[in-house]
Image 1 (cartoon, rainbow, N blue to C red):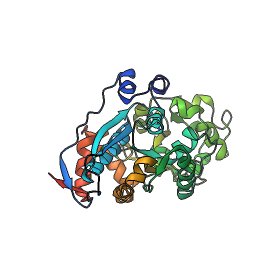
Image 2: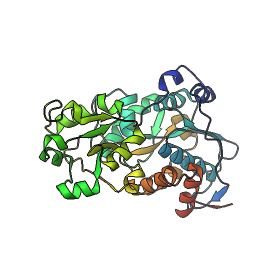
Image 3: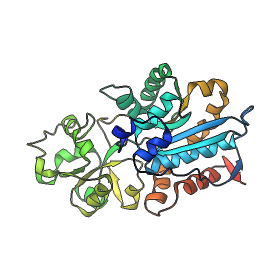
Image 4: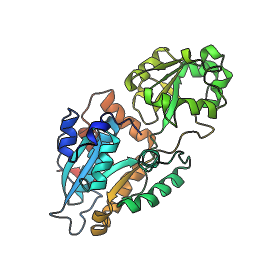
Length: 326
């Protein structure tokens, strides 16, 4: 669901290496700590077969990409680590072209951005099924979805929420107009599942009930600090971001179900999965273990503590018993 930061230029390029170089970024390297299979067992015939794993270049995607690399290697495959690709569209192009075999994608992103639908589906299972069914025709097979739902959300300082009895997005309408202040990204300010339709969905007219002067445009990281410092009362956040608990922000319940589901799920090149159907079962237990709380903590270790995504992924895989130390 995140903004492709270099999508326009990257779409003109065909190879992963060019994608990375064109955006001035270095790959996250093929570094992952050495490991041996734990509960993940080798897949028959995997030896000598290379699986290309890709991901986008923000924290959560780097962690999920490294988790996928560790899982595939534990299953006995060789991997080419193509994580840290700058943007959603370049990753999609790699998957569609066969330049990559496996990624972890979000259902709402595929439905709205890749498949071109105008409205998301709030029910998480229905959203996954719709994306799964439509993407089969594109040569991609979606594996079991994780519980983690990296959707947009509105966050508020916990002390402010407590003082004003705020629990849901609907509660914003109970505040005086002057208190309805928002910090959002430029993209969220204009997209079809962004601020204006959100306000309308909750019965607030942008202009009269939420004046333009009440809306500030910020970079993603700045929204968290601006919300925490009180520059605005409500900040657009991503529900699995580790800065939410680190800054003691409260996420308001989307009680009228405006936002689509953005559950993460492994996406396989169908050709690979037809050769090795057991690979889907390798990733399924990992999806079952990934919740919003788990992902917030893993993201926090990178964004707040400054740790390497590969090390965070490795330690979580160890803790869950999917792998063991080499």
